[in-house]
Length: 163
Image 1 (cartoon, rainbow, N blue to C red):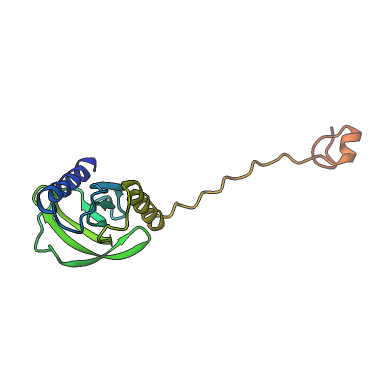
Image 2 (cartoon, rainbow, N blue to C red):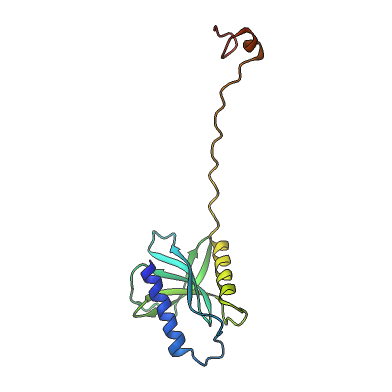
């Protein structure tokens, strides 16, 4: 997965330097960063996380392997992401392959720092991926306490037991 996410980040860094320079919506305080990518619930075929760029922040679904676009670029599809369902739009680049995005913020002018954008991405993921409920640990079974009378008469165990 690290290789795939790295290719995604490199692609959007290239877009920033080659296509976005001078575009007014570009926030110079921000950089391209992938946040919280992990395998989704669909049998680990798609990595899911948030992509921060100086011009947008989006949920991203990135297939395990580089895939052709298959005519899906700019097409919308609804997918589960964590505990919710969202409409994603298909995108493609030969280096990254087909992937899908769902905008969280655009433009990014409301973010003063990269740290603020990252915190927002992490908070978004925390809302979508609630922590699993903790499994209660069973309490240790205590040995039965002998009756007070058994203590004084020297008998141990259940009432009526012979010592």
